[in-house]
Length: 312
View (cartoon, rainbow, N blue to C red):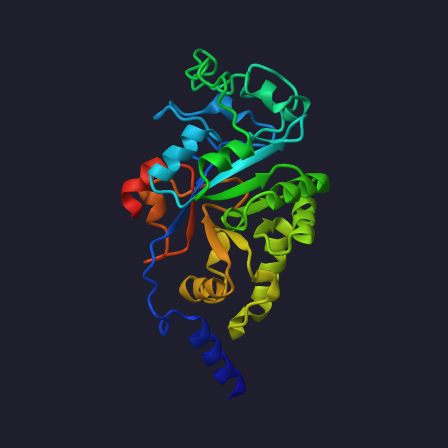
């Protein structure tokens, strides 16, 4: 009888039958703004994705001011950007570890000042036909922005800032940068990346919203242990969770009760397509059709332009 009653309690406490319908619209996070997309087939961490793009359907390049503006104009609630430290102590907004793939120079961004990075062509390496043509060559000169430039251009918008390294010194540099901002703007920013830099930011700025694999793992393992009771572990409070679509259904109360619980502890939930290995997004109507009915959590997309008419 005890086992039966416990089973009934767990079912009722984590089903949507007695949950008030959520009425909010989904929250859309645009990956790198509006970017050129590419084949995920046989993708590795060393793949030069600029050399395998699909035939361009728009003129925007990732991590640029125009691409961010376009993403917001198409209805994005938040834009994800990548940052790399520069030689003169700034943060450049750029994805790759080196400049060799996308640009007309080589080396790491940290070997250049921000002024020098402004002179390179970030559209130089893009090709959709194995190098027969380069549709963005010559069009990316001066397009690499600094993080300061981005936040000055969009002072009221939400951003997810991706630290690409696992260097704690980068976390300390980012914490110093965040301290220089006004509180209202800093609250609009979430920082994610390697475990070490994110831990350093949390140490120096305990109230900053951050996420890493370590914080995500700590939250979800704790939640799987006790979430059936309705309790939310401290590790899940005031953070951001990027949950792969493949595993979301195993979370206690998914989707509505889980989202309600995270809302109550000021945690943003972003659903990522696939298994989470790569930055797969919900980029088409077919992708959106896989979302739970009346889903109102966060959604990761690489094509905010393609789904904009379907989401609001």
